[in-house]
Length: 127
Image (cartoon, rainbow, N blue to C red):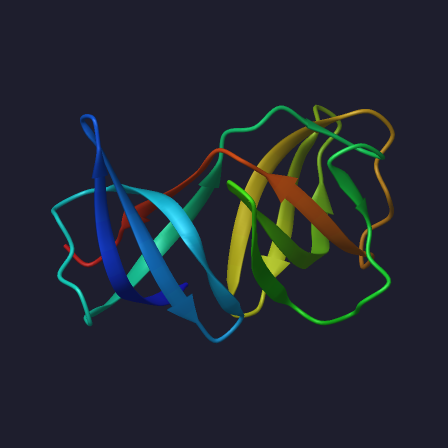
């Protein structure tokens, strides 16, 4: 996903970024070389939360890809692209995909879902 870095925050030894994208704005942990403010980066999104179908991963009434900052986490809305038997799930988020592991009974492929996550990391793909 392509993001514009609007602010860099250092909290302890961690680096967080505030970002803007076509899908919305938010804050995420940054991994990789320190980003420059007002520069665009291609990032891979990783969600480290313990995800459960019907809890923090639910069916979305919206059928539009979206990212929204909510308190200390992000709300991501995307479409289920694939689900493996072990819970490995690929979510389409606009032009990008997010791979997650979720427990419980999954929804069907093609369903739009909303993920509530507090532990989101970006990995810089501009190397």
